[in-house]
Image (cartoon, rainbow, N blue to C red; front, side, top):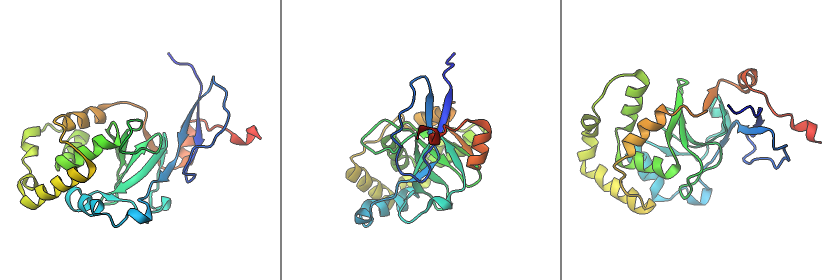
Length: 217
């Protein structure tokens, strides 16, 4: 059993991790949410229109932290929403499609949350090639049995425009269909790794101990 004390450092709204010196016998976890919006000079790129049209995933531009009333542990870097206001982000740090460091999670407006991919590239493969991935999340949350092959036969998978856009997304992002995407989604949803979403920082503080950064000065 790991007896190392765990402490949280609040990085919400800081868009970075403070460079504190922390004793090695402490396990420190960053907490809070940050935005990871598309840079202004990239917002007109065709890829974002395609992802919204084909995948119903809207990469953030003008959204604010105040739009998302929750407090995550570890830190959660929001990069996209859907049409219902549910959001997606990388867990534990700012992730990019080229790295494998941070998993992707979701937080819904109804308070449900979870991990859905091991990294951003895996998430993009999932939403690009498997339009029924949201249905699988709902079945898993409700504990209902389902047949993956039946779900894969969703009408949009046979729609010519959908397939054309899918091909365009894959070309721009250099994605290849992963036959294990659905399997990985289910594995991630069942993963009991520590990703917890609280209603507020105050609630998180009732169940965790925050590291007092003021004591460092």
